[in-house]
Length: 296
Image 1 (cartoon, helix red, strand yellow):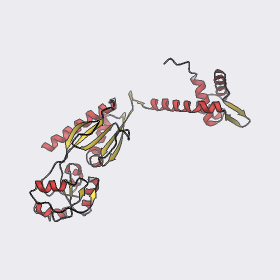
Image 2 (cartoon, rainbow, N blue to C red):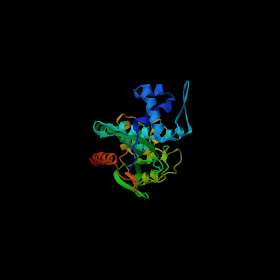
Image 3 (spheres, helix red, strand yellow):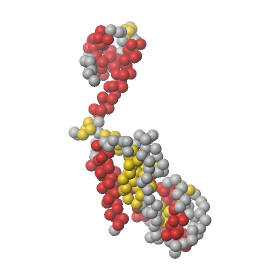
Image 4 (tube, rainbow, N blue to C red):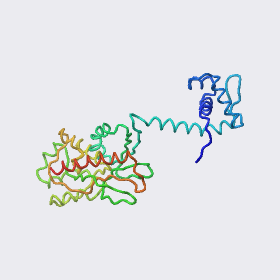
């Protein structure tokens, strides 16, 4: 597209004067004289063949023609300013929008983000959490980290690592659990995935009890309930390493079950930006280190 000559000084003078409804205040903002602002606006009016302001004794009144021009100018100047602000230390600052399962975000991702910020200070990572049910397109996300089997429609998914589930409870309850059979007599805190507790009892070779009680949409909430003595949780120890190290909870048995993996996902139609590629490479490296630790 061949653009006509754009009188940027005149357009900037008009936009500032329109916001302030004053040539004087516009001149202060633009660091020029009041006469210079008035002159630039006059040049613009002559170029367009319209009157943009009515000059009043105590200020300015913008005309209909001025009101028609103003929104496009404000949007354009705002976008240019935002773009210029993205340049820092020889890099263009990029925004990356990430959605993640809350359990992984709190228990695994957050402790590692200082490393990401140190390596990529020019990427503004915007993190939102969910309970694994998220509309990546509707929320305008670049990536999501989801739990499951990797089969999602129109989604490209890259495996990160598994996070097997095990029994977690406070030390006072752990002391009561001599064998896996003893777990069946406790209050069993559960997620909306109804097959988890039956799967664990099957792995422990114990007949599963009838499971009733609180249902949580987040392992973070479930384990917090366990910490408060509400019952026994079935959750991934990997995501609660801080609580385990602090003695807030214990893993009384080594028995684990796996119900899926964490995956880095994006819409297949989403073009990969430089920021997305950098984040993906960093995340895959972090995930590989986690897999190595789990194998030890």
